[in-house]
Image (cartoon, rainbow, N blue to C red; front, side, top):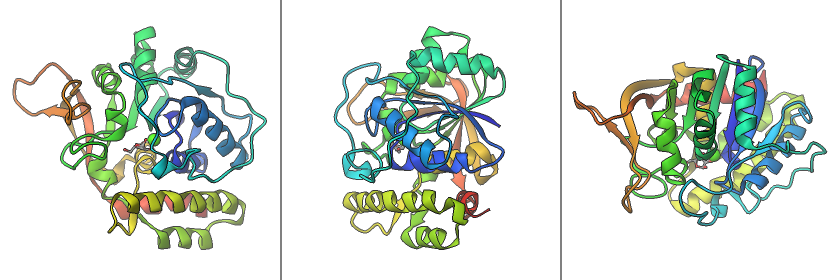
Amino acid sequence: MKMFIDCDPGVDDSVAILFALNRPEVEIVGISTSTGNVSAVQGAENTLRILKLAGMEGKIPVCAGAEKPLVGEVDGFPDFIHGKNGMGDVELPAAEQKAVDMDVCDFMYQKACEYEGELVLVSLGRMTNLANTLAKYPDYAKKIKRVVSMGGTIYSHGNVSPVVEANIGGDPEAADIAMMADWDMTLVGLDVTLKTHLTRSDVDKLLRCCLPEKKEMVSFISEELKYYMDGSRRQNYTMEYSPLHDPLAMVVAVDPSVVNTRKMVTRVECGGTWCRGKVVVDLREQPIEGRFVEHALEVDSRKALNILFAAFQN
Ligand code: RIB
Ligand code: CA
């Protein structure tokens, strides 16, 4: 499977990337970043360090993208959950590899053309880079095989407002453009990610059972998750686990059988206060103008976790 990742690493992004790097059938052909958990430049730096940790330095091009959402400005970073550096304040050694010096839209389009009809686009952050590329290259969507995106919520509560999830809420206009694009898109949102619980004992067990050659990667995951899990507790004092966002989306990209989905006409609310960034689905017979997007609504979370862990054990 040829894969392109757009992300904002981010503790959970980095776990998702490391999982994908450890799946033999996945070939990552490019990674782009946008502002979100950290700045796009910091996200690219983090990605390069993650690639070095995985022994993939110099093998996958990385490009820093949008530093601002389509509308408005960046309103601070969620360092209480991802740390100041976006990796739970764990410092990985710097890489020699540098980010490519290219406009991110050109980079994304170039990869889509190179692997036309084959590329699975995994979106783990705001959809700003996707929207900008769709605007610059109207045939971009047609070249992508399918899109799997961590974003949104239909029935669950939100995580940045009562009804809004962070990736969509961070750039609602971009997400709405992505929903309207002519591609096959699956949203893996809070309806399923909040039900997929990672516990400290899961991580400790993985540390004990992983392959020796993967120990360094798992140790890094374990360290950065300490901060992330504490962050979950800072948000909700009773929480004894961390919800798994981006890694679940990545597992779905590799094995869609872990979720049940439903296709619904979908738009994103771009106005309002509490609802700005809400994913809106219309089940009426004569719905609003919108395209069908597939939403993950149920998850076999044990199976998803087993798939995630197996990548470091086999
Ligand atoms: O709402 C969860 C999403 O927001 C994840 O992608 C996480 O990395 C943060 O960006
Ligand atoms: Ca993310």
